[in-house]
Image (cartoon, rainbow, N blue to C red):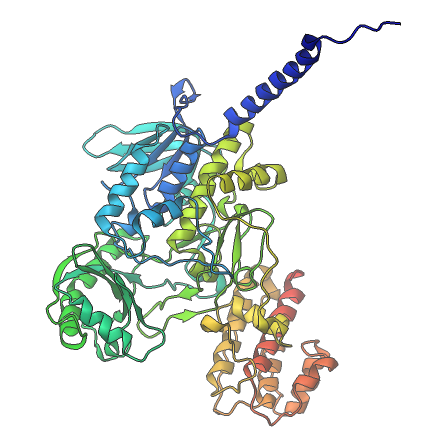
Length: 634
């Protein structure tokens, strides 16, 4: 029997071996995935040339966030901006009044790199300080190369994969072809993705509002404002929706009603006012209609229309806005504030129901909560707030466009339906999205996984989520906040589909007036006509099975339940006559499964004035039944 006691060396040696192995594995993991701040990574070699891991197209806040995030994750980044300054809409567009996103407990949902900006500059920030902040942040990242005053001519494609960009620096006669493992399109309109061939819709096309684009804004700056008078007036105007702080104000709601624009295709709305450190104020209030941001000539014409209107607005403000008596024009923004152009189609498309039911997603990379604010599209329409979410998640899949490989979209043109884009388009959400795009590059490059493969890989998404949290992002899994309207009998089959088509709005309180009586025939006439037009368009490929485009015209202002039955029966029968008797119309709707016997409890009297809920329920059922019958799918 061996009674020899183990020596100290024999005890320590196995422990040291285990520790060495642990540190080797840990270092290998950290060196591949941890955030880099100081150590410069090597540029990759592609086709024998020094290249970049990622090229970020566009120096808007979303692009800066994407570039910083990728660089901090050890990627060599090229950030390309056409102008001489970074910050895009915040600086060149002078949009310095930040649309914040707070959660159910008032927590700030948009943190990470956006929070770095916000803590440094605050709301109603100084434009020149913002330019300096964006530039300083980029110059301090050793992995980030910045090219200003550089035009992006075209994406470089290899099949359906983007492998770089063709560039032209200002003052140069020679183009440069710079290769990369992937590209992040942070241009506001998704110009790179469009040129590469990614599919998209334009404006309200996806919900049947063809050709409708939200109005654009030309922001301008004034001096000579008495801020004490502004504070005193707004605090005492008796309007709950106005407000003022030491450096921001939103008000003059009553005063603007008497302004008559010189150009009939322009509107002056209640302004958002941001005070600069020198005492000047930035005015966001001038809405210009009829501008197609895809068309440079249309942008120039709209820009010039706005410039011509500004002197008349200033004269009006001097006479009607307390505190603006000595207002003087300083300058206008060099870039239009464009709210809407393309909406790309990605691996997933965010819906208005996602947003207003506060849905979470397994591949969340950020959250938003800004009201679904859809600005007017013409001088004879008004802007609406479709609803106000408590919190919703943005899926990584929304950033991955269909058909093009190794491309991410980090702007308001990502894969959001037009209506939810009214919330997701705001800059803080865009910076969160940009930061996620930048971090995703590290995983894609190091693991040799495409973005599309990442969008279907739970391990990849888990890594991305953990990395964003380490970078300071606010990212949580949550139970969706329940909205009271979801308990209404007309919600699921009625309000949900008609809201998807932009046919109703709930305002800031999500009140859709489902139990309120219809005040006139227009709700029935206009909405039933629109449903039939959408059905007509969506069944165009079905030949003889295409649903005809039926226009509803009513000659009475009183909308009874019976009249709603007759109108919906007329639509269901694709224009057949013979529904003069509401009882006959009801029998037909029951036979066609538009209504069921159990539904009749909600329609007790044919002679009652119909409610919005009763109308929406039948419109939703009409669309669902006819579309399913023709297409074979919901």
